[in-house]
Image 1 (tube, helix red, strand yellow):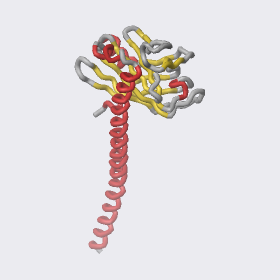
Image 2 (cartoon, rainbow, N blue to C red):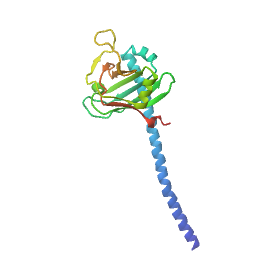
Image 3 (tube, rainbow, N blue to C red):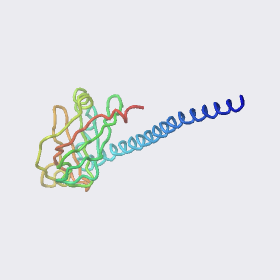
Image 4 (cartoon, rainbow, N blue to C red):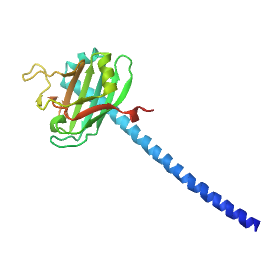
Length: 203
């Protein structure tokens, strides 16, 4: 009788421990999946930054000299954006401090029509002239709510048309925009916000 009672108790204890362990396993699995996705997104944002800077140099030759004397920059890519379609973009990139070398992951969120004027790929690079402008971008983010007009040129300076230059969008902040076809674009970024990603920067 005593053995039977012991067996029942042992069985119940095993069942209890098993049921308690399952949620832990599920949580660990969810955490591992989340970290894998974050790692993938970090890699994507790093690539976005590198490609955006390269595209800026090609479309805006003079930007290289501006980059060399800037305090820092933030470079982004956004894909799958269409004109006159309300959709959230899946863009992002990184902010880079040219003085300290520090980098921060930043999300690029689009909530309305206008960005990239219909191009499938769109790049944006912000150059910051001083520490105050750079810090303000990271602390407060940046959003655009104007500039409905958009014009594009070849991005080649001195060959007719408008000169490929960046736009001053705030004090100490110059924005360069590039479309996927290599064109320098004076395009609206209406409905777009740039905010530091706490998730991606938590390591």
